[in-house]
Image (cartoon, rainbow, N blue to C red; front, side, top):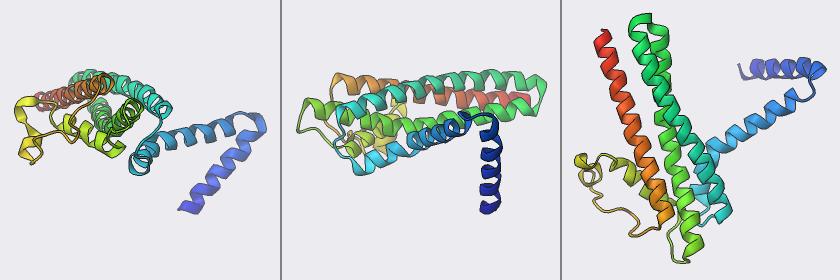
Length: 198
């Protein structure tokens, strides 16, 4: 299976290279960028306890772009769920895929928020926490996005893993919490539309 797929990719590259010299390296660079964006935050959180500020700024900018994309995907999911009530299952499938994509993006944003916060806080204070601490802080805020549920206290973590943080980290945590609440509203809306359709 893997050998057949590799042969198909090689055939595509050979055919494409004959009429478009930019397409093949462009696709390779695009895949390298996607893999870096997908795997990079995991590696930084695991192996880079105090990232430099420039890495935090890059993570923050990319994270903000993914946050906006998540909000757009959530809106598309809501519209297609409503349209699928009248038109059929194809739009319903797309709506569910958009909701799942938004939920996966939240998990990725938790790591990116941790990288941004660690880089920002360590640039301001040498005694700030490490990247994994700020990623856990972001996860704690995700669990606490709906305050009356008090999920962290229920799970045995009533206090955040980091005691104090600056304004930049606070804004990032507020944006992350907003994305979580928005995604929950989209999921509930999706379920309600499906229930009314049935």
